[in-house]
Length: 107
Image (cartoon, rainbow, N blue to C red; front, side, top):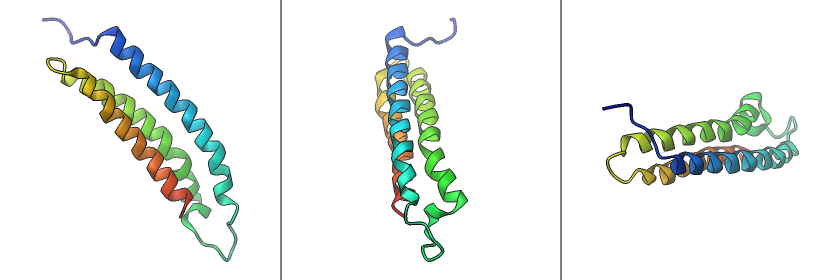
């Protein structure tokens, strides 16, 4: 028995979704610029710190990479069953990265 392979259609769908996620991340990066408008000495919000900015900018990209990994990993793991279940799981992981970004932006 050779190595497990995923159908080309599945990999194309994961790639297209990852591309759309990258575009959405770029839009989110643009919007996140305005999250620091209220930063001052009187407003010690987490988003105003270096760690807050790095978390806000990094979480969506970490979520995107993790989502692609989860989608492909679950697709390989569920090879005998319904491998398309990896897509909703990957979307949920990606949404988690966006949620972390949103929570930091609104802190």
